Image 1: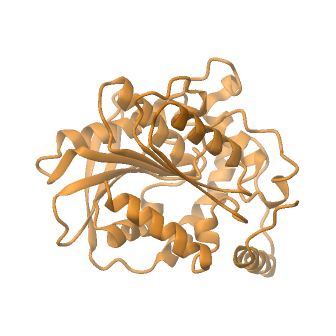
Image 2: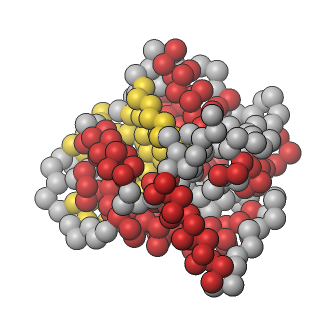
Length: 318
């Protein structure tokens, strides 16, 4: 049986295509051109996330952390006025490893904090191809370390810190969870929203390719920008591509979402399964009719109530 797009999402995609055509069309960048793909993707983040609505009670302060190679990584700590001391989330933005920024994710970060009351530390990690290998994950972990070191002054419980990332941010978020385990740090959780985990996922699946919002060409572009000629090699580090991990024991409890029309579907399901088999508490949601980015493509539709309620519940429970 052929899977079909959720009707609300299908209408949203059709409306988007009509608007693009009316504006004279838009040409997607060629495969393996990460800078062009960055320019193509970046303008879409703010308007998409703005659909979440206002967050009048949320403000942020700016800080910085130092990554393992000495690079200074900007941080933004978002808080809701009147929120009580407690847990916090270290957030890694999406963008296929090659695009996005904390500034471009501002609406989304404010929304999560407004909805939950939980502070979010957003890490403005470096991007590929300027940063390669495990550098982005080390940037993410630098955010975790900074928050732990400053937990008392920020009224945060250092035992209640989770990592979270969507799409391309799922790789450094999951990688930071592995790194935390390996360095003796217990995280409260890892929240992975349709995460990009496996550099080997570059051959088109005929079932998924027709509805691929994030295409296989884009996926190759992102991973090749990060790994160069090591893409697909046997010795790729799980800190760069977490699907390469072989030991899932002792990792932080996980919450994973994916869509059944997302090209990340199989790698996300496999990752969840390996966590479960290693004894890691794992909650998995696979939404039918949902392509990559289903939350913001179909915002306001029936699926919105489901993912919003689940994410709010999981974040508040940290």
